[in-house]
Length: 428
Ligand SMILES: [Zn+2]
Image (cartoon, rainbow, N blue to C red; front, side, top):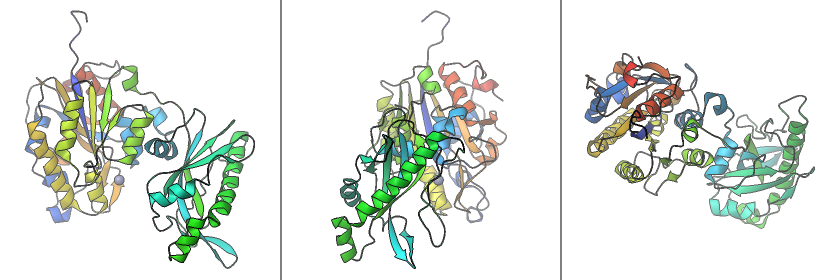
């Protein structure tokens, strides 16, 4: 280190999934964050900078995996190429080679009705993982023509991953899962590029896979048993979200930062594995409101002994809002705030933000920006009366996109990026 170089700081980055919200009548017209008592968040915001963060594209509600990928350093250019198939595959621990295509699947129930095959249950009665593990054994290394093979790997319950391997594969294909409709039928997979030879061949391989999976599963002894027990048969596989598997590099890789993630969410576990960041989870990290917040924070501090930057992801605010439970969201935020009381802040840059807002009134992700703060040790303490949507709209950070928020955070740690201001206090 030269005499001119400033010492680097460590980073602790909290992602409170779905933190932002809209005013709720049951909370006296406040959002859950505004209604919560948050003295520690107020203090961090007051001694740092705060504002609103736009996830992905201003005004567009993003999916969780896109919003979180941006916060984990995936560029805006690459983030939309991030498909759920490879993510699910990484979460399920499936091995892939570069060029393979991963597809999200459901074991589902197909029934003959009026001469047509109808999807009776998209989840085969939420079949258990031990059952899908047994069924997947007959769906290994299936020859799909042109050197392409397909193998199915069970995930949780009805969920699974299809891995296509072989030459000339493309992920520009449609889904066989109809998702909606009455009646629902398995869709023929089509190429999404009109002149794409590879996508046409991949679509043909997928349709061949659908037929073979139905043939093999229909006569599987486990389905005979399930039928006798009055349970829905898991006699077909429906697929969606195909994605090519390729190496994904982020700004954090470029900076050679040692990064770790603490989470209980399968999606974030998958993202972490895809990005080659070590992921730390435990049975107590439930991705629900009963998650062990103190345990997550103490795990993060243990990791900070030999990591530069630790992300802590908490799923509960999003879940509560999806469940129309603003009181539960408020209470979880208060418990999170309380858990912050013991953290040491020396040499530590702290961020609190989210992948998107989730509206407790509608139960849906909303397009609103997310209240966010960035604490840097030794900074001047200004006043933040209450960390929440209202005050953050007038915050010193202004409103900025998620990738710029991350780069501003990294600059505060001592990893400047020429495209962002050198200190967050000037990022107005
Ligand atoms: Zn959500």
